[in-house]
Image (cartoon, rainbow, N blue to C red; front, top):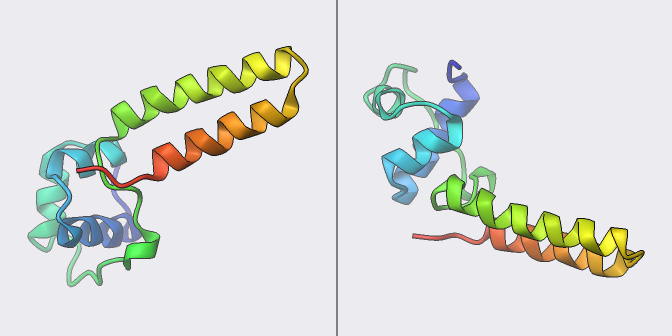
Length: 102
């Protein structure tokens, strides 16, 4: 997968925010060399994306594993005919995923 110019803006924003290179690379499904290329100017003079356009800080793998747990809980609630509980599980899961982590 190749990074786009918009991806490069997000990469630069994440770098400036202080994200770890391996977390940035994992977010895009790339290796850290692609992140270094962006940082060293392979995409030209990239304007970093503003904070509100950046994904949540932290490794996406653990976040995804936790989110799967919330989704399972939502499915169980739907199977039990409890849409309110299913919705709440999804809302809680999204909030947990979007939380910034070190």
